[in-house]
Length: 483
Figure 1 (tube, rainbow, N blue to C red):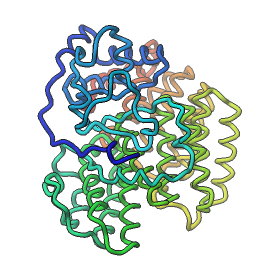
Figure 2: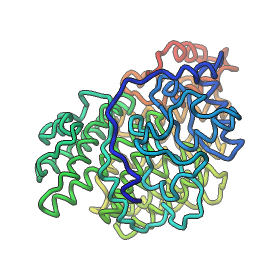
Figure 3: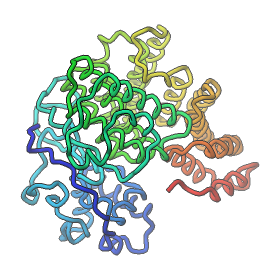
């Protein structure tokens, strides 16, 4: 990637509502319109993770110009209209450089890292080309170093992790004014590492929805520190590793709160950081999360490839537990492809690797990965394959085994159990599990869990007269949704 492909972020400006797009939606709800977008995408072979939140962001003017995948879908839905007719601004106004000619494809290797529109974190989707460079091959492209110059924009003010980065001595207005900060040292590297730990701790306890916007500011600071440049190579390495891990953490917050495009961009940023610094541990982590995101956003084949790439990178690191988790990521992809044999083989491999036990080479970020997570991820595989009884058995075991510290995961596993029971024809048990999730949602904010529970409620509607089901449906319907 050449430096001309990356632009400096533009200053924040008030969002202008997209009234044209709102008129096009008409009487349909945002959720109904999002379903039409997904259906249109399938008609032309695209995959977009459009939901009511995305439609709301478009209509609020937060997304001033859609990414290339959404552009193709919208133009397919409304033939004869241009993006301007749909209320969007020209790409040049968002990107800060001359626009490409109409219909011209994005650059061949823009998948790694993903591009973002300057104000909205809107990630550009993969684009099919004949470029021999594959982001899932473990080559190292040092031209990607330009990505480290990109600052992350946020509309948030104070952040949950601000205390962790306060000692950096790098005011946000200094970054915005593009004034070079002082050279960072060991103190800044330590503060960055502590920020990653604190964000993960808060996520484990409370979920992602309340953290994502606020956690983006420390990430912006972290990448500004990389531009400032440390004197000692050991400090440089720590800063790069810390910034990459922070990008993954912020990406996970986006992922768990349903902002899949944002998550894809952050994970790609971490992957680029890993490659330009030749950091296989960070690269394996970035591929691991990319595989999980691909599975959740309906790209199972990409999930398999990303998980396999992660395993190639991680194998020399010597962590059987890491290899076990990556095998589970691969299993999730095979399940999404309805390949039961491939899924079962990966699950067997994951179990065998897990049983080798922990070791000093296990990454710090894998603290969440224990027997409960192993059971939970296997439950998700069987659920995807439609084996509800087996899925429910593993989900129940996951919830039972989970350390009480991981409140979010307990809610997740119990939501998985409720859904599997509902789809497996056990509505009363499903309602009981759903009630437990609703109790936990007083502490946990996760769009992913809320979406799962909403799906369970829809499945249970025909059984509203069954024992306990009506009480669950009534309580679920009366619960306020996360904004």
